[in-house]
Image (cartoon, rainbow over all chains, first blue to last red; front, side, top):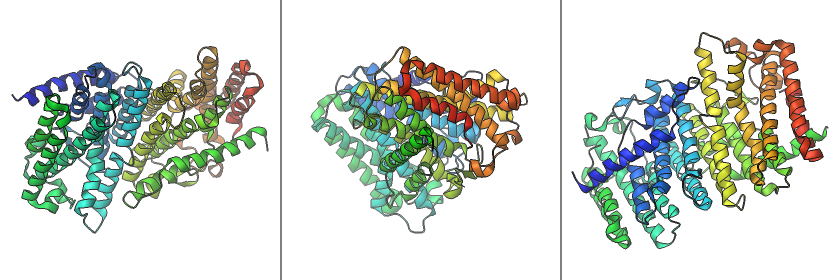
Length: 297
Length: 297
C-alpha cells in the first residue's frame, strides 16, 4: 500500500468518525431527515476534500482538533451538492457511490431537505467555539466556505452546467474551464485555503496553496472526464458515459483523449512544483496531485 | 397610518435596498441563478423578520449598519425556505406573494439552486468583516442562524410537517406546537436573539427576547391557521384553505375558531408583558405582537 493510500485510509476513518459525531442521530419526530443526512454522508467515498484540509493544515502544524471541523464541513457541503445534483430536476441519477441516491432511497422532499440541512450544519460546525479558539479564524472560515459553495462558486458552476445542456452551441475550452473552476474547483480551493486560514497565514504560502488547489481541481475534472469515457461502471459506482450521452462538452471532446491526458499530467506536475516552499512536509499533497490523475474512480 | 405601519414600511424600504445590494446582479454565464434569487427575495413581503432584527438591536442602541447584515440574512433564509417549500416535491404551490413561485417562473433546477445559493449567501453576509466589528459576534450570529435554520430548527419543522401529511394519525396540540416552533418559530427566535448577540448582552435581557420571540412565533402560526380558514385569496396572494384540504392538523382544528383566537390574543399579551424591562424603547416590538394577530395577510 502506498504512503498516500495508507494516509488517505487513516484519514477517511477519522473523518467518518467526526461526521458520525457531528450529524445528530434520528429522533422519533424527524427520523427520516437525519437518516437521510447520515445515509448520504456516511456512505464512504475517498474523503479527498477533508484529506486536503487536514494535510494543508498539517503544513503549518495546526492541531487536528482545530482542522477537523473544516474537514467535516467541506465533506458535508460536497455531499449536499451531490444529493441536490442527483435530483430528478437536475442530473436525475439513481446511483451514487454504488448505492441508491438519496431521493431514491428516501424521497425527493427528504433529499432536498437533507441537502439543505447538511449545508446549514457545515456552517454551524466551522463557526462553533469548540473548533478553532480564535473567533476571527472561525468567521474567516465561514466567509471562505460560503464564497466557495455559493452562487459565484460551486452553485454558479452547476448553473452553467445546466445552462450548457439546454444550449445549442457547445462550450469552448475557456468556458468549460470556468464552469469546472466553480463546479468542482471551488471546494478544492476552500479545502487548501483552510490550512492557511487555520494557521493565520497569508502571503506567499497562501498563494502557493491557492495555485496548488486550482491545478489539482482542474486536473481532477479532466481525469473525471477521462474516467467517464474509459472507466467502468463497477469502479465508478455510478453510471458512466452519461456526459457524452447528454451532449455535455467535456475536456476529452475539446482536447482529445491524448490531449486531455497530457493536460492533466501537466497540471499535476505544476501542482507539485508550486509546493516547493513547503519542502518535504508537503509530500502527501504531492502524492495527491499524482493520485488525482491516476485514480480509477 | 399607525406608528407600526409607518416603521414597518420604512424598514421594508431599507431592507429592500440592502438585499438589492447583497445579491449580485446577473452575469452572462449564470444570469438565471441571480435573476431567480432576486425575483424571489425582492418580491416584497412584510419583512417582518428583518424588522424584528433591527428593532431588537435598537433596544440596545446597536448601529443599524451592524444589524442590517443579520436583517438581510434572515430574510434570505426565509425566502430560501419558501422557494424550496413551494417545489412540486414539497407543497407544490404555484403562487407566492401574488406572483408565480420561483420554479414556475424559472424551472425546478433553478429554484433548488437559487434556494441553496440564498442560504449560503446569508452565512456569507453575517460573517463578513464589513458587518459587526467583533469576530466573536459574527461567529455567534453564524451559530445562531445555523441552529435556527437547520435540522433541529426550521428544516426539522418542515420534515415533521411533511411526515404528518402522510401519516394516518392526526397530530395533537403538543406535536403541532413543537412542529411550528421549528417551522416558523426558529427564524423568529434568531431575529430577536440577533439584537442581544449584536449588543453582546446575555442574561435576563436575552431571556426576555427569547420568551417574546417564542410567544409571537406561536401567535403568528395560530393567526396563519385562522387566515387559512377566514382569509381571502386576494389578501393572502396565495391559495387559501389548502391546509384543511391537505388534512393537516391546524390550531383551528385543535382549539376551535374561538379557542384559537383566544390563544393568539393571550400569546400576544404575554409577548407584550415580557418586554416590560425594556420600557418604552420596546413599543414597536409591542405593536408587532398585536399586529401579528390582527394582520389580514
